Length: 118
Image 1: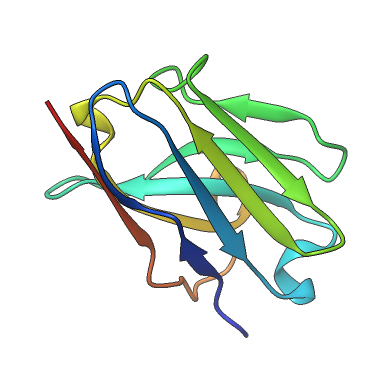
Image 2: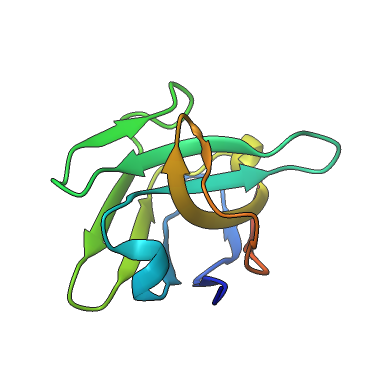
């Protein structure tokens, strides 16, 4: 199982924007809803955004209206555009296929760190 490769994180001031990318393999991408998860220090990993194979999106209440998830089927890549960032968005962000609100595959990537300063 090839792990996803997340990138695009960094340090940004509150109110700023970042665009995350997740390069995956066809085994992970095709036929699956894809999602972005995040894990803050001392907290459990949480699902923040999903996109189905049909492009239907869903968001956690805490990011709705600020984050946009999308997928490029030709590149087997998932994106997360994050605007109006808040300090509480600080976390390591991961992507995975999603089933029943959880990561489908047990092999997670390294994630990408997002740090939002106040």
